[in-house]
Picture 1 (tube, rainbow, N blue to C red):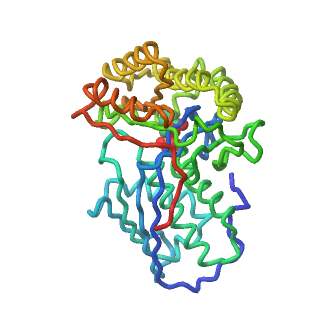
Picture 2 (picture 1 turned 90 degrees about the vertical axis):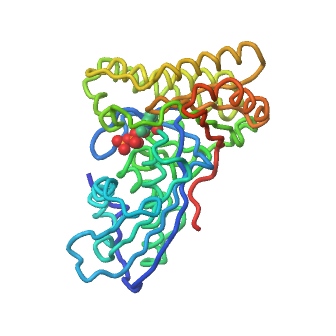
Length: 359
Ligand code: 2P0
């Protein structure tokens, strides 16, 4: 499937050497993407909070190449030459070459680092691939000055999606919808769009504390997990549920009904993991401490008037979500009651942010 609108018609290769640096964030889904078909088309709509503090900073130095038959790049990660991540990025360039023919015209030196600890179990593919996509769009703008900011963001999200589905939601913020849905005008399976409605004040600067329960390598990658949704006995119903949850959470984000927000978000997290438990082969990414934390959060919510809730990514870490006005009391609860369930008592305090920034 080729998407014509993103194939450049005219490029002027007037630039010889140029370098761009972008900072792009990770994101945490409220309604989860789980299941896809080729080429990186989601089986259901998803919506996420863009994070503020968990980000990748990537610079790409482009130099006009003498050999334009293949894509040449070198990769540095956290200051050191990195071979381990190269295949994923090489595959990304392979997928986007029709849309970015200039990757053949320039040699690239990619230098990338994350704000969050290496192998913390925080997905770095979303921030990592969106940062590369933004650097490519800066180059494309230099080769064709007629491109609008709107188009550049859309194409960056489109490219990032081809690298990693959730990366399509890491260009803008604080809320991004990816996947076509009748309630969100302009939404698309091809790229993420900013949530187009005014959000109730309780959801502004929404807090996300990421509790690092298990920092080890996952036993089952997300790509394998997505594929297990083919022939999954509950898949069809799950995709319908995600679409209904998107409609409902869209209303909730506008009317400020935090109790319903909590219900949808926690149900989505547990449903995601239920899909893993009921795949064949089946697998479990939660750890005993994940469940300890969830029970403590429920207990705290029952005993106080807090609107704290949790969500999970494809791993054992717990994202604790809460309104900004509860920051002091919840941060104290995390420090006193939850950090003991984290590896080395580690957690990261973050909140919903605005997306990619040029540096
Ligand atoms: C999400 N996850 O919506 C869901 C929920 C994890 C749990 O998207 O194969 O790294 O690169 O498209 O985007 C993780 O999967 O997978 C993910 P690929 P991706 O955030």
